[in-house]
Image 1 (cartoon, rainbow over the protein chains, first blue to last red):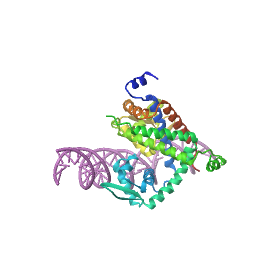
Image 2 (image 1 turned 120 degrees about the vertical axis):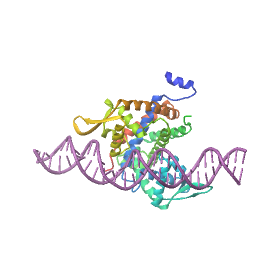
Image 3 (image 1 turned 60 degrees about the vertical axis):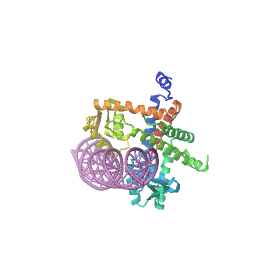
Image 4 (image 1 turned 180 degrees about the horizontal axis):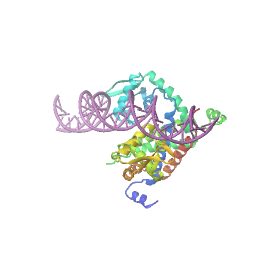
Amino acid sequence: MDLTEELQMTQGHELAGTRAAAEAWESLFRAQVALMRRFQRDDVWGPLSIREYDVLFTLSRCPGRSARLKELGEGSLLTQPSLSRLVERLEADGLVTRGPVPDDARGVAVTLTDEGARMQREIGRRHVRSIRRLVGGALDADELATLQALTDKLRAAQAAIPDPS
Amino acid sequence: MDLTEELQMTQGHELAGTRAAAEAWESLFRAQVALMRRFQRDDVWGPLSIREYDVLFTLSRCPGRSARLKELGEGSLLTQPSLSRLVERLEADGLVTRGPVPDDARGVAVTLTDEGARMQREIGRRHVRSIRRLVGGALDADELATLQALTDKLRAAQAAIPDPS
DNA sequence: GTCAGGTCCATGCGTTCGCAACAACATCCC
DNA sequence: GGGATGTTGTTGCGAACGCATGGACCTGAC
């Protein structure tokens, strides 16, 4: 342990080395970008953008294939206004419906239509083939399990760290 | 090993299970999105967008702080026209210069100016603090090293897999 | 040399995005 | 109840993006 880390620990934090964290993040980021570029090139998205597909995918895993706009926004990189208009387009295409939510007249419940669910499954089936090729073809089962465990832990632990005050 | 995997191996591929690959990718993707959202919220970017910073960062690691437009595009999610205009804006702000590249009159060499390098270092210094807090605070040194090794391997191995023919 | 095909970058144009402001509702405190 | 404050979603508008296309240049065959 070098002096910097020791100093940090005396301040009550158990932070791994700055360099190790930065390098791990960069590797994670670059891997995600590289894979995303390939997935984007894939001819599996039909009339949807990846962001639109991701919303349909998220909805397909929600109870009743329905979620509030706010919940959808929490798992997305889009800002709330952009998501609002994305959902507006999905509704115009007949893939989702927008309705009221019980017990909160402000809320908007976004619900997958049958056609939306069908579209999601169809694209998802093709997309998962690409994932198997590119991700499953790069790492073995143990490595995949380890990667999943680490990224799950990273996401959970990061969520527990407050914003700088 | 289940029947599906066995069948795949008889076809000459050593693919890990589809489910494991899909779940690992989703975890990786969600972790990246969650962290990215927090980094975006950080008040460290000054007048730049994250994408603009990423270009300056990439240039700062290139020999001579200079790279061709094409090379910059390979590590970015932006399309070529979008990157072209992003660099155009960076040039207008005095952060990069555009010049010819030796031995190829089509090429455009993008070079970091002193002010661009200073801006990148200043933002980078603040950004790396967030990375240490959120990434270094979530995983210990061993976990960071493992995560980096796996994502590096994933990126390299994926690059070696050809597009579907 | 020159012509065909490929690569690299820029530009026109319609779409999507983010920011700021706003409207509508919920919640809390009195 | 009633106003102050916070939350949820929408809208106006300028900025940025992606797609299609075009111009300039490189490469290879003849």
